[in-house]
Image (cartoon, rainbow, N blue to C red):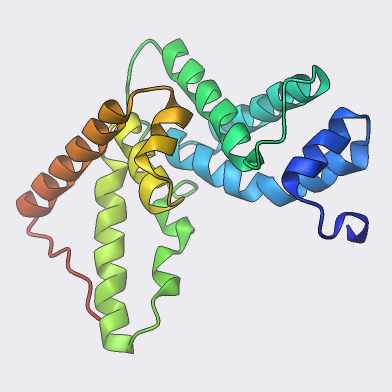
Amino acid sequence: MKKFEGVTDEMLALLYAKGDNQAFDELLSRTQSKLFTYIMFVVRDHDIADDIFQETFIKAIMKLQDGQYTDSGKFMFWITRIAHNCIMDWFRQQHARHIIEPNEDNDLQNLKGASVLDTYRESEMVNEQVLCDVKKMMDSLPPTQREVVYMRYFQDLTFKEIAELTNVSINTSLGRMRYALINMRRMAKEHRIELALVG
């Protein structure tokens, strides 16, 4: 909406808290794709991701209306933390840390990570295969490890931010990353996968 051109997400959140519903519509359109991708990456099921996405925004609306949001310059960080808490609640309700198997709808190929590589076609093909292999290995990681890898490499968050978002210590988030990398290296070795990108 042109009405909100140049208005930050944080300002939109505060406008909505004061009763401007159009500000919320704009906020939703700006953040929904990134937030849904994050949720989908962790839960691996489209219907569950839809439910958690809606629950996240319901909780965000309630917090905004209750005046529980202050402009810290990090609206996306704030709402991602709400999403993380909703995801963890959902996992707790499952009474286990099972991994939902990937299917055609939630395959990591949808992230299109390979499309950003602008090398020669031969190198591109090698790099696409490497990224495909990495994504397949990430599918096999436990949710907490998959989440930290996603936040670090796809959202470019620091370990301090990851720790804050996931409500754990920095050491725990570093430990999860360490185990994720150990698991991925083990899988690469077992399947004789070469993980070096070609420049």
